[in-house]
Amino acid sequence: MGVPRGMLARVDAEITIRVADELLMFLPAARREPVRRVPYDGTSTLGHLVESLGVPLPEAGPMTIAGEPVDAATRTRDGDEVRVRAVPRPQPVPLEPGQVAPRFLLDVHLGTLARRMRLLGLDTAYHNDMDDPALVVQANEERRVLLTQDRGLLRRRALWFGAYVRGPKPDGQLRDMLGRFAPVLRPWTRCTACNGELVPVDKTEIERELEAGTRRSYDIYGRCGRCRQVYWRGAHGDHLEEIVREATRLVADDRADGAAEGRAGGSDRAGAAVPE
Ligand SMILES: [Zn+2]
Image: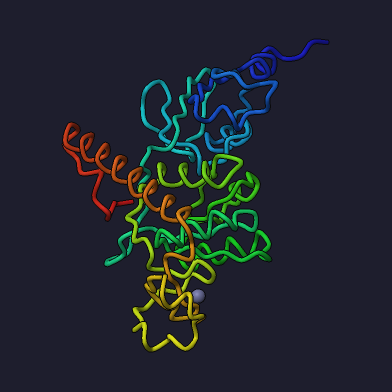
């Protein structure tokens, strides 16, 4: 009484998946190898296989089988050799007409990153009390890139556009985000508290609201059109100036690199409007 031979062959069947170094961090520590052989079950899509390794699909870049480009919906076959790359950097985000930079939504654990992104003028929604389904709804409705360190959140099928933020601290997280999207920055134009846009103010107009010392030493640059908070530069100290300087330099470098590659490859990757 033996098992039919066809059955045996199926059980033994395998697919080879080679994962980019940048994605190894998503694999369980005990199986963190660039080449993995996984059993072939006869039905799984490539996207399902990639996620079963631990890589959230929004983090998976171009995929190939035997060198041919494929997508996540492709059904794999016994013996396939799959290659999964990281997302390109900078990663294009579909923009609406007139929109110069992506909009973002940050999960509840990324409050400091949210304030720094607003400092740089990026439209960054953040609430400290939103659950996962609510985050997905807002990201999709407002076409915001959802930034998170929650891999489960990135696995939600309905999510329009998500990205995993690398790094335990805000400095590294900001560098990671800037390197990934190289967004157009408009420092000092947005309220760090509520994400409202700042409107210019006449210093004399609000003098009476300010302490005498403030009036003499600080340079007022705007008032939040939403929550009325007044912003002046000297009050922040050099720390925020330094964040802005560093971020501006990073993005200028990334965009210059992108433009150079675009010229070499005959395409314009540096443009703000990128096709889907
Ligand atoms: Zn505000």
